Length: 471
Image (cartoon, rainbow, N blue to C red; front, side, top):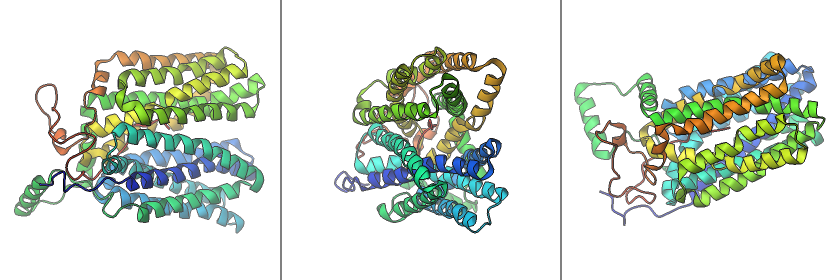
């Protein structure tokens, strides 16, 4: 048995490495989100083809991510992360190269973009799967680790568009696509070579004694190792059987769909009809992005001391309905920017809380597949958000659609908070999922075991995962 004296020394290197890989990957993706549509518009002049390219990336992203959870658990997140990033780098680099050679018809472009989306899904999953292990090794509270992850995401999402916009304006969209390929390659190198040896291996199914007993039993019976579909089914069964995680997944799925429609259709239509122009879109994103970074920083510092449910729904109250309603009422731009800034601050607390809840509730050997399913279900509506918002604006107009969207956002977040499942948010603070917690237990739930907590006394289990996250 490993004692406190035998436990590995605290090290921030794993957490810094994972967050660095996430930062370069997200920055490149945000640069590509500007460069790729601009490239398609410049070469085809078709908004329909531009939308088709966006769908070709996001649909494989959601589908493949949902299906690769068992592979991440079986192969280990480190291998999955660096290999998928390497494939993405090759596919992204081929786009400007083939275009320069005159060998990039639209069908080939769609194929390259689909490959990038299909690889991004498991790559993003694998990086987030390593956050709990990095937190264990750094001996930091889970809210602080997920808060730093949120800060990284928000900061990269703020810097990436600025870099992408400037690069596309000065050097053209192909330069932005080349930078995207370079960031994928850099992220692959960080995960493959910069992390400590032994980190990010396949998740152990149980304790060492249970593994030995299971292996001996399998050897005697001649049983085959657990198959892919059984692993997939185990993840689905766990997600379905946990009322809080299932409720979180449904809630975030609804809000992601509404956010996608708001960002891709309602905000641009408002900018055009109000006369504020496209610059207003960039200003709203900047206002919300900067304050979201501040919110995530505060969450990283103090969220582990705050009541999660109260902060969670207060954050949704700020970031949700007010954005829709301030556009619907025709407020001046400075009021709109103020509302977006306040909303960004509230939104900065959401993903750190969601991540900590998931890491505490899901056993480590199931984290990859449970997160993959939950995140994919939460993102499933994103490809449809713009289509539904566009259809609604065409049928009833912008203002009724904004009002309806705000009302639905309020109902699905704040009124849904009255359900009893949300009381579970604060009941496992400071704990991480273990294999035993996957088994049903009588009573109100398992009590904390000796040695569990934000600073484990034994060798940390090999990690996985993240949350049904907001994009």
